[in-house]
Image (cartoon, rainbow, N blue to C red; front, side, top):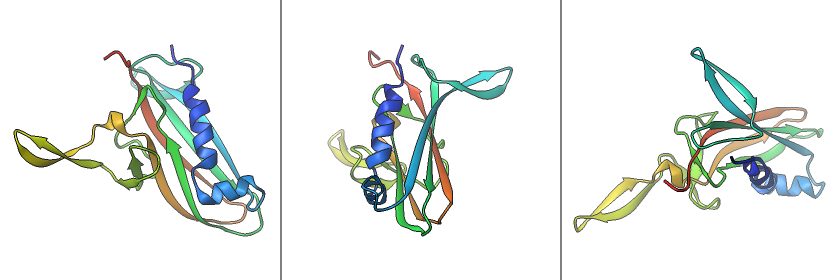
Length: 163
């Protein structure tokens, strides 16, 4: 059973992921961020979100990060970043909004799917990076107007590290 240490790690990253948010924590800009983790349950063909207090290999967790500007002026250049916690893998196509970038280290971001150079049978090739290796997803949120909020979501699957 994995307790969302997933949530704790994600909360830390959401608070420090962007220059705008780093300033907000020092009181320079009034940005509030809230992160919610819910387990996705499918019953009778219908999906629902339930408390993610416990997660097991194979479970799908949805993270939703909401950024809210509590100030009177727009926040410029906001970048929303959601980490992909250890023992989970990003589920492709689950990022909302869809136009997002991914990272293997939380620092360098590129359009998805991520690609890398490799050598196969003595030949240099370019191949897709497995989803399991993604460590963060980021959106260029742009400007966040006074009193406005934006929500970003991703889904991850809990993996069994022994496999």
